[in-house]
Amino acid sequence: MVNYVLASAARTQAAAMIQELEAARPGAAERLAHGALAELRTWSELTVLEVEENLTEQGCSVAGAYDFGPPPHLSVAKSASRARRDFTALHELGHHLQKNTLALMEPFATQPDGGLLLEDAACDAFAAEILLPAPLVHQHLDTKGPTASAITQLWQASNASRMAVCVRAAQHLPAPGHILLLDPTGHLAFAASHGLPPLQRGSFQGDIAVIDRALAGSGHTRGLTQVRYRDGILGRELHTDTAPMDRYLVAVLVTDSAPWRSFTPPTPDTGPRSRDYICAACDEEYRSFAPACPSCRIPPCPDCGRCACPPRVTERLCPGCFTLHPPAMFSARSDRCRNCD
Image (cartoon, rainbow, N blue to C red; front, side, top):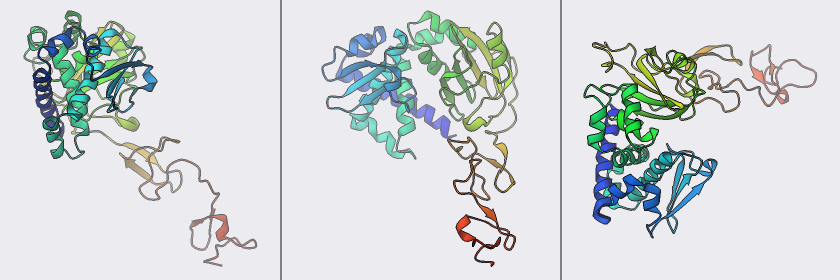
């Protein structure tokens, strides 16, 4: 439910952003649609910088960044294609509008995270709305929802980036799901989610069912698969349709009502599945959704609190209390700890 509300709120926020933009600069939306970077470079109140991709904001959903300044400036990765740079520039313009307009800040007050997720989702929706007007979208995406081939056709008919097309397609999903854009190695270049937890950009999805067949073959496949969330956790099974998009692969994944099938019953399960682990310290079996240790990639055991990293201090087991203690707890002439000796 939270993700449905967020998606709806993001589109409402994006519409308000476009209205604010047009009030301040009449005709700006149309000019931005024909060349976002070129238009933004004419704005005296903003500085546009093209930088290396590793210098852009890592927490953002695109390869770009926004800085208050003064003067305020947008950073866009220069290694990307022109269409992707325009999408990124519009996304960062969205941050600029929301951070400098009181009316656009008001919806953040009702968000549990202070509006962080809503702000970024609204930036994507704002950029996609400008680059892909409704008449063009409706011409290519069926009322039943998007197929992977239809998304590719929409991209070919527009000047928009693949990411912008994915965002617009996700707005038309008939059920909870994802639109994925994968590079030739199977890593996630971009994802637009609707009603399901978002996926991490750069995560490897190339060995999961359907996706692996698509990457190894023509790119056109259909079937059931599970996407990989944080720490290898697999989500619920989803109906999947894929198609090639130049050097990339686009995939549509939904829980039910798949547009490419006459009838699609809901898939089982309601959320991500945790992985099973065996604690290296206490030998207990456990399941965990907790973040993994950055060193050993194993989440901590809920019983003893340890991950799989070796302890920094060598410990000894006391035969009296059967407890692991650091060496300082043992005298030089005893195998029992000081509490038991």
